[in-house]
Image 1 (cartoon, rainbow, N blue to C red):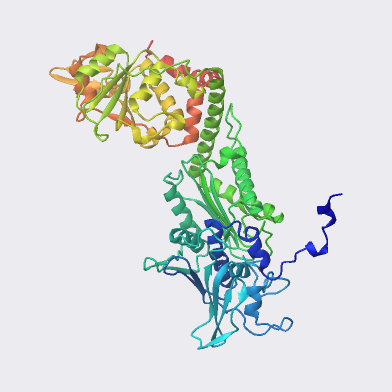
Image 2: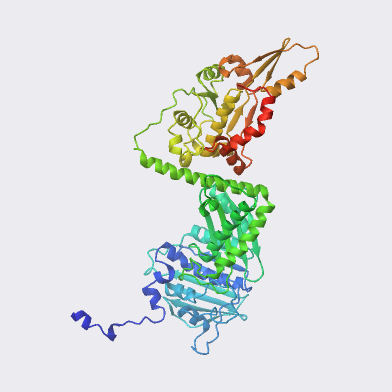
Length: 640
């Protein structure tokens, strides 16, 4: 037995009294002594002021960052902290609250605070303990009194300042440089936090006065959480996929509110609040929201028999791109730790789930267009996840040097570098490419010929798709990258025009290209950069007049409009390569004469299903389609 062990006795036991535990172990109470911990002091005092608002006693909070940036004041117009003498401890209540841990009116059966963020009774006293100076000013019962504290201990008794104008509490504090690495507050951080709170509490007026810059900001946002959601989506720079968000609120009893919207982002952004306090680490209430969203989507898909072959929808697929805000008010919240970043109330999981799920199901059924866009978005997320996993597997099987991308030497580029007037014509074959190159305007029009039918990329991992020379050349020519590396800022042409023969083969190649763009470069379609050219299939000469027909139906329309005794001469183009360059230019390339069809996505879900049916590995949908339309095909002239 060592001498060190034998000397260990009762005299070695240290009992920290008063607020000494806070100064010895500040990280237990504020998370650390870094900038995050420093600013947590502000949030603690602000939360106490917000509690006055939540319980109907205040409507305005003013936070002031004083000159020098190392002192903050928080003022509310609530009831004012009591200053009378406590019957048991024989001290003014104000001094008791600011110098004693676990003291306050938020314990037991007190009805002074029905909803509260400051539950542990340590917030104000912790701020006091970690401040080299704290001054509390109370306006109450027509009188104004103040008391000064230093490092958790009272420096003065209650001092009367005379009659009070109004009522409320002001806490001024200067963090202790002996505790914190830096005591310099960040005004941008404070303002941002206060603005978030003003959205959550849409009836509360919050003012931030920055004396370091002599600026005052009224951060009040009466639009509340829906307005907050719109701001988060705007800040993300990823547009929403639906016109309106899903929003729901309950004003009676324990208030609860949620607003969310799916966007084109690949991230999931959920912000949750309990009694107005941000729960950055989530908790049972946030888990309930996620469960409710997932169940509502799955129930909608089952009810409407929406089935997607070859993929399994996960919870992460459902929530990809979602931006949402959840605010709940709980009478007795169980936070994890004093910093209150996570809620642990077990019952809140089912409460929030039951609050969100039925309402979202009803909303989806009442808004079919939005529901279709959301489900389509989810299916695309699932396919992208599957493709990413297969691509990762493919990479493991290949060495990094097993293939190299060829530069598009066959590209005949245009002279213009202006995105707005530059165009890329993608044509099939060298002969068509030759006609297009001769007939184009070389200043603004580029031509990229593709040899043969390109790879069907449906269901293939991106690594295999990009192993195809034609598609690799196309991506290189566009300059955007592809898949996760896609960046619209690199786009070299404002219009990407698919110029194929006006026959079955040409339509097939166009479909393959559109499938590639939809799966791997969908932003090009969403932003309106993809077009289909409409070259003529027939030439109709009537005397000195010439008409150009895009297809059989257009030809019949032209013939029906001719005079009765007209004798039209009809010639059919076998392909763009056999068309005179001047004719191709006049009918298809020149801006004043041509007709372009812009490619748009009306429904992600329907578009996904269409490409799966047309190009997927399972040929059953194509067989069914052919059989259903066989009679019509036989009745018409077939392009064989």
